[in-house]
Length: 251
Ligand code: 6PG
Image 1 (cartoon, rainbow, N blue to C red):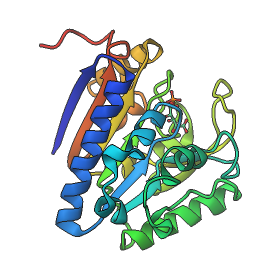
Image 2: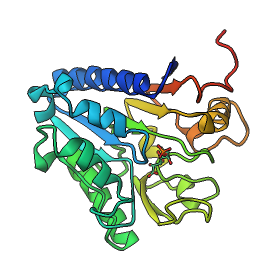
Image 3: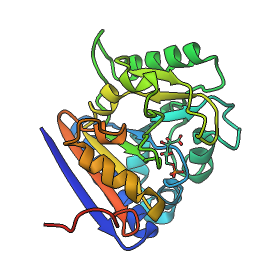
Image 4: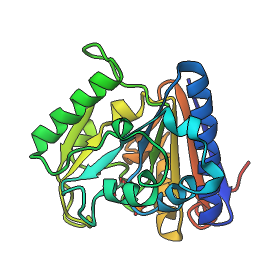
């Protein structure tokens, strides 16, 4: 059963503040229920504000961080210290500051050849989620962003990874994408198996993609982001006023 929520905030800091609040809420419920909180981080630049907030004193909850397992929704095929690495951004903004056990941080190894990186991460998911063949990992929380073309994670329109049925896929990127490097990404089945999916989107430039993605739930050809609909989970879109500016008035 899907329950989806759209929440609009005045600006990007308010979006990040709400995302942090929801992170803690999901984390504490997961830890209370199972003793662990599994989260896949979003790439790109939008989540940096959230990561720096979570690294700050307001979220210095040692018990929560000790039981948090960090995964990634996607990664560029670069070394982990490359300026384009999603891991590098997360490390600098959050992972170097929050008391997360190093053994609980599961990086996508984008520096490996594509097929090796995919197999490596799929094996990580099978191990850490104790999956049987054919199972999907059920992340407690997956953070996502959206590109102006409607891509999410590294699932781009027209690219084969969008239709992949495996847990993890390798993807080239369309010529217009910057940085124009290949990617490793969780796939739609994996995203849609999550208990909670949280989009953070800010800026007027994303308004058309947000409109299309949210309409996409009923459209014949939804964008990649429009196809993220957790099978049995919560889908939330946290938007600033600019990113929400093309949505129909709330009923
Ligand atoms: C990536 C991300 C990607 C990102 C969107 C939005 O690796 O680039 O996973 O899906 O979320 O492109 O990026 P911004 O937040 O930088 O606008």
